[in-house]
Length: 281
Image (cartoon, rainbow, N blue to C red):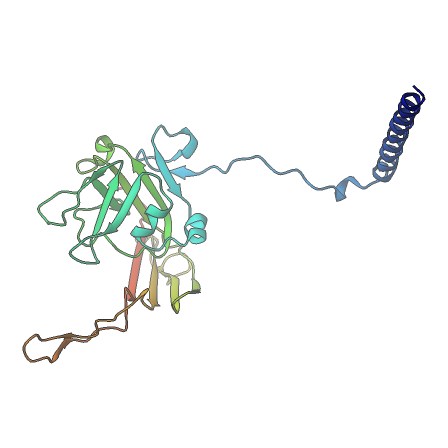
């Protein structure tokens, strides 16, 4: 009985001591923060959602108010994700699959939600339409191109025949370039990566006449342009153990082989011209 009483008293003392320590800690914390400068406090994170304007319905609307299954990429997202060609889109877009055609590396096989045309024959129509600055790219051959200087990319999933016409059973992909600003300007970008990857992109804005350009009659309006040049090189991912392709009879090399396969060495360019007339047509 004596041991039980002592244990009970010990637990009571420990509980009282713990409560006293917590109370003193609370008073100390309140004293330290009572005279603190509110400007030094950590600001709360903003819960405001960025408003993204898209043209999926052939007019400018907010992304969150558009009743279409669409994935939109802003210029900042394109640069951050390093999207520089059509194939890169499938890495960041759900339900989208893009890869090169079996017959070459310039054609793209695009599938959205299982709707796909895998044969690169020119007589077959694709199930997903690509629109570059509003212009329809009719065939898969040549649809695999670099995309320097992009202003926005939108991937629309599901049939889009009402607004985009035929060959959009699976969906549509719209790509828009940056328009000329009408002012003198230049931008130079360099990127380096693994396997000796190097990319250079140069963009130049130049006004022809009107505004900051040459002085001309006002009835000519303003004419400005923007030119972009991109060069990229990279070593291949796989070692070429077969060597050169030789003639089976003479043994002479026909096609000199590279030491590595799937290497990259290509150039691309883009020129945009904007002519604004002072009257309505």
